[in-house]
Image 1 (cartoon, one colour):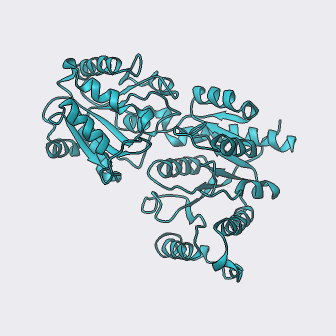
Image 2 (tube, rainbow, N blue to C red; image 1 turned 45 degrees about the vertical axis):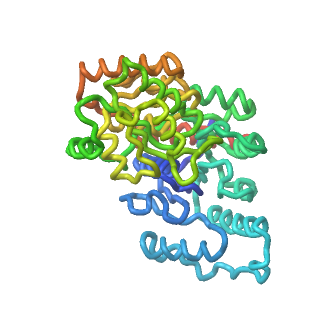
Length: 419
């Protein structure tokens, strides 16, 4: 089978936040290490805007047009330079201001598809089922133009499902020539839910992070600021959602065997029916008060930028991922980036990552008793080996991309034969 060479890729990320945005930055840098030229198309004020990088950054076309003009101007001024300016781009039609949102989406998708198809890319790589964040079918337009499509399957299906989710995800998988998953468990889940996608799956690890830099000198001041004392501290980081099982973690903290631990919850809630308006961690706060854990739980509501996140991971001794379900976890890779003890359930392929990681505590289940038992075992491991360990070198994004690119070239070559 003849491989199709990949020397230039456009990555499309309409989200651009610290989760998917951080992922696409690391993926782009890894691909550059593997000899691939990368252009990243993302939203206004993307996560990667101020980061040192070796790829070019462009805006995903947004709506309404005034917002698009503002974001193009901002990125032109601060990042990209004159190459984005296109005096030949046609003017907006006269009907634009009276047009429906759907009609605007369709026009912008046409323009985006034309830009990507004309960019000389060997493949376009998407990160979200709705490639532009809207229902407009960018993938269909690119397929009509013969552009090979790669898609990262971050979640086989959403954790909190809504009407039409199965159809939207299925259409994205059907339109893609290669589907990247980050564990054997994810590959099995994708094949079970969408059997037709199985022949196009390429398994590749999620890497550790370069954007979160190690700085052990931050540990003492950060622990003092959080009032952590000398005992072990466990961090629960990021979005607080039903499947992440924070209620069972709090119940485990109330177990007498775990009273030496302090817990830091840094993030924001969504997906619960009983959230508290105006307080990103209001539901969690109520649970802490109900369990009488105010002295041993620190709540840091809201999103966390790069430097504060680094301080948190340096300050804490362990990272808790007591998830009841998962499709993989960027926080798991952040924990390994900082060499922290990772306490996790064996869901979403996390056991596959922790098998070769020396500072891990795998939970027997997701119940409070299982988590309490894990905290006891993790405390013992920390006493025996208190210093952080190095992140596994095979999880560096350069190493990952050098293995992944040839596999994708083979997959795209196979897709070319089929079409």
